[in-house]
Each structure stands twice: as structure tokens, then as C-alpha cells.
Length: 429
Image 1 (tube, helix red, strand yellow):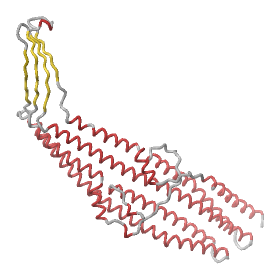
Image 2 (image 1 turned 90 degrees about the vertical axis):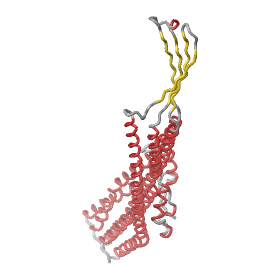
Image 3 (image 1 turned 120 degrees about the vertical axis):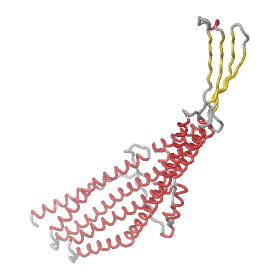
Image 4 (image 1 turned 180 degrees about the vertical axis):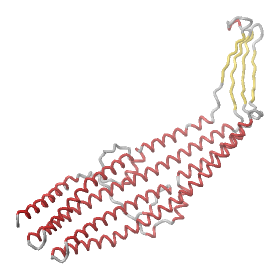
């Protein structure tokens, strides 16, 4: 072997050595594996967006006691100083009064009803936020899973290329192969190792995203995720109509808009009540200078039906009716959107299921057979080195596509559960 050839082999071996040096640093997985159900439970307790929605619901619950309460009573003192002194002891008379405003019967109960509906809406929006965050946590979890699998496949392919290098080098030393094959394997290995920093960055980004949803610091350590179980048997999948009907009953956002319709209906009734007068009842105590003291009373009544004030109440009724119609239209629009989301997501889930089955049962096993055949053929000189490389690249791509399809299935399933408003156990074994 000439010096030039030995130099090429030394370079190739150096590349292999660098590749080996990267592997042990890959890492130190946490002893505690990640489980998606536990992470969802943690997010429901710790996620700041959920906590904000929870506090808005608690705040809304406090509006009903305020809405049904009367206005503050008023206390008055009237001093009549005659003829020219400001001494209260020398007043002609002094009047002490206590008054209370009473709305027309039914107004307070309608205001309370509106506040109760608003609190129920806030509760529905809280549940909607919980479903949204749960879906986001599951989606982020499977992004972390995919990132781990991509790195795992990377190391598997690195080992395969090292095996290729060893085979090519052995054939070259035996005078049966070429140095080009040795260098090709070294170059392929170097190219593969250059992908590792990108894969590591993608994993760290996915982990940071998951940590944020859990209410943790982005750099908090996370273990290795447990893989998903995959699709259920086709016969166990719920029908489209069943899911759509379940969504109409369970989707929190639809419930919130339905409550908004009821609140608007109550608001319309309250606006119509504004045509009725309110009353102000006052009790007074008179202390008269030079005359007998005594008690008195007074009742005043508002006149909302006066021709110069009635137009504003007419406008209030029209406004409340328009808001009610808007809430009804919003409900129909959201309902149609939900039904579309379910149909779209179910179609995507079915497509992902087919790809998962195809990769698992046909594509990957055939690719593995092709790789083994190409390796065996190259060892005996019946196959070109390039054919072996092509088989290695194909199985790498197919494995990544399989896990991407599995990740897409789980993410679409999480989105479907959010769209329906409840978990759908029949989509998994």
C-alpha cells in the first residue's frame, strides 16, 4: 500500500473516531421517563394561562352578589338658618333623612341572572382553556418524542455507516475493493455527524416548549418520553356523526356561546324592564326651632317613559336584541367550524393510520431486506457500494417518516379531542 493510500485511510479512520467521540456524550437520560398523562395533569395545575382563566372564573362568580344588591342608602342633614346666622343650634329647623332606592320588581333578579350566566360562561372558557392546553402539551410531548427518535435513528445509521467503512476497508486491504468506497463511507459518515447538532437543537427547542406549557423554566430537565401506542383497530374508530354530535354536547366553547345567548336574552328582558320606574323611599326627622318636632316621609319615582328620556331606553332594547341575534349567529358559525374541524382532523388521522401501517408492515421491512441484501452482495463483490449507500439512506428516510406519521397521528388525535371537547379513548388501543 502506497503512502498516499495510507494517508487516505488515516483520514477516514480519523473521521470514524470523531464519530465515535460524539456518541457517548449523547447523553444521560433521566431515570424517570416522561408520560403524557402525568404531564397533562401537571399542566392543568401549573399552566399560567389556565390559572388566569381560573381566576377570571372566580372573579365572575363574585358579580352575582353585587348585581342583586341594592344601591347604598343615603343619609342627609338639612339645616335651615334664618335669618342670617350659620349656627346649627340657632337653625329655624333641622331635618335628618335616610333614603333607599328600590328598582322596579324584577330588575335585580334579571341583573343577577346575567351575572350568573357570565360566571357560567367563564367556567366554560376555563374548561376550553384546559382542553386547549392539554392538546398543546400532548403535541409538544410528541415533538420531544420525535426529536429523541430522530437522534436514535441518527446513531443507528452512524453504526451502519461504520460497518460499511469496515467492510469497504477490509475489501480494500484485501485488494478486492477500491479506496473510493472507503472514502465514500467516510464522507457519508461525516455528513451524518454534521446533522447531529441540528437534531440536538430541535430536541432542546421541543423540550423548552413543553416546559413552558408545564409552567416550568425552559431549561428544566426532562426525561425520555415513552412512545405512543399508535392507532386502534379500524373497527374501533368512532364514526364522524358520533364525534360531531358529541362535540355539540361537550365542546366548552359552544357551551360558552350558548350561555351568551341566554345572557343576551336576559339582557333583553332587563332592557325592557327599564321602561318601568324605580322608587326612592325616604324617612325624615324634623327638629323645629320654636315648634314641635316630628317625623316625615317621602317617596319619589323616576319617569323613564317621559318623551325626552324614552328614546334611550328604546335604543337599549334594540341593542340587547341585536346582541342576542349576534350571539345566535356566533353559535351557528362556531358550530359549523367545529363540525368542519372534526371532519378534517378525522381525515388526517385516517391518512396517518394508513401510513403508519404501510411503513410498519411493508416499507420498512422491505427496506431492511434491501439493505441486508446490498450488504451481503457488496461483501462478495456482486453489488456496488453506491447501492448499499442508497439502501442505507432509504431506510433512514423511511424510519423518520414512520415516526413523523406516528407523531402526526398522536398530535391530530389530541387536536380532535380538543375539537370534540373530551377524550376519545377509542382512537387508541
